[in-house]
Image: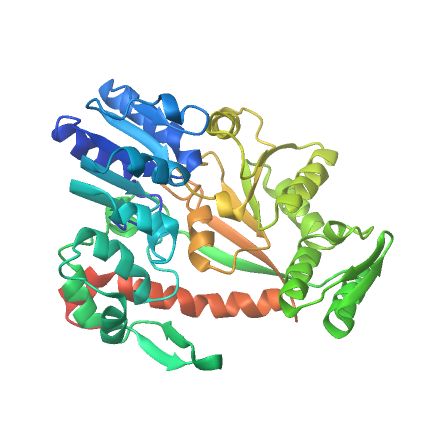
Length: 414
């Protein structure tokens, strides 16, 4: 099930499990989604799920009938104890798209009568991302990786003789082959009352101090701060430091707020309504939240590594709050498996270089029950920030060509 993020894949899946009488069912999901599945099962059907999570795993009952919820990190322990289930649900199933990961290996050790794979972002690079989930669903049809790639993807030989794979070579044939296994509902078709999402850039010019450090990092691969030198021994490290600098120079111990965070505060004051804010860096969450609080707004912080109950409490506080001057600041990577429909707009101070991650984050607001539809990305003119934003548009085009396969079949054209 590859529905648009925000359409709602959990409800129909739970209905399907209930229609089967809640047989031996294993639900595998990200850690922060465990509480969501547990709450919905109990709220809608009065079914008490069992949990297999860190600290309690060895005491979990995995033999008796019912629903067992776990996360991907615990899946290896489960398959050692039990491999056959009546129903298996993989939430955020793109986590198994890489055939070389332990998550995929563990999944292949499971036998089940029914497999449900759920993902709002099933494609990141190209058609090759679909081989692993399709191999789980139909191993006799989608047998081996490289024949699949040869049929559906473009290839060339990279540095050192490595094979580069990307895109989709035969969209019409892929659409036909996907059709029996891949369901997708689009927001425009299902949530007809939801305003169409608008995504815009807010171009900025760096502060003089910020620009100086940016140029130093680009030209010299180092810059001097009040706490010493910031060194970038490789191109990869330099790229990260440049991106941190654009979020806020304070991430590099530079005494300057930069331009993006003050610009964000101006937008918040202008709107005066609940808002979601994302940044790619955990330290950036704290810097942004502290700046917002200094300006007399309430700011909640949501980052990875929190317990499911703590994550749920933070989201609930944002959702049920009465102060219109409140913001939930989160890392982009945690933009899944929770709902932020109280927000009226979303801002990105920095963004992920995988466009699907950004889209998932956008759709915490733009989903069933929400009214906010405006999404803004702060970009800095003449920087890597601005260039990558343009590149991401092409990646989204490839993804849409693959996941919206029904449109190709229904219209007969690409």
